[in-house]
Length: 235
Length: 181
Image (tube, rainbow over all chains, first blue to last red):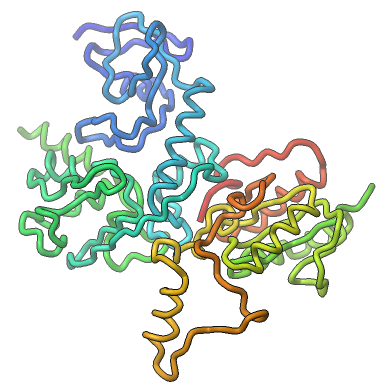
């Protein structure tokens, strides 16, 4: 496979053809923040946290879905990008009711970690305080829409890895919600195999194991990539 | 060296941030060398004084008393610190916000769900009226420093106070200083 040479933050980088900027950056230990990206499932470029600047292009590009091009000059950590990333995180916090203090994922949450990484000490936007449901009709798992960031990791892992597509997204804008089957209670969703991959994939405390209390919801997200890799090698 | 005039305020919060402040333990003796505590729920002072250097404000703005006090605090204070998650985000105090107007909530809690003799709480001049919504402090008055945490752990409070005592720019970054929850 052909090699591609390009620069990230003045560092000369060699990548394989077809690799994305994010993959190449990670292989060289360059940190680009991500939220919707998950190893093992397809990248959708939804959260916009991995936006990078490419010289000669006025548009910012999501690193997770942009393939590297020979001699491309990429910047991942400019003042403008830092400001946008902090804004994105603040908007996510303002959009739903994220109360870290009473969340099952407190201390193990990717949104919380990102807030620290972007230096968010407060939210400058008005909180929306939307009314959101909590569905605990499933015997093992629950979904708390107050904590959902609509990253669609659950949708992708359910469709692409488990292959049942129980999860999807319904509604538009502020009314958008992840749903199970035809917007039925999760416990009545006949397609759900209760495999728990969505529980592993969720970056926040939105999807949780029932019975977990504050700070108890730890998960090993690498398991998704592990399952995918194991399957690819066998087939 | 001039002693700092320090105040601590308790708005709509559980006093956990004040408990965490007391967790500074023996460092409180060190702190006492540098400050005068001019107003606090831990001190018997009725009126918020003039010319306060630093105010640690715990809690969100939830009722009319909170609103009145925080405006007074802002007017009379040089450096206002939003102290803990309720002050910074609304946090647990703001859990009522998605549920609608306070009257309806109070009715549900004190009348519909009451086991005996339910009635609406009404004591003008004693129990302050709830605001339509619970607000983080910076939505009501300008805030100079944000110290997240539920509560902020004592070492975090100490690190901030040490920066304030040392003078110069205040810089809070990283998990130890700005993790919520």
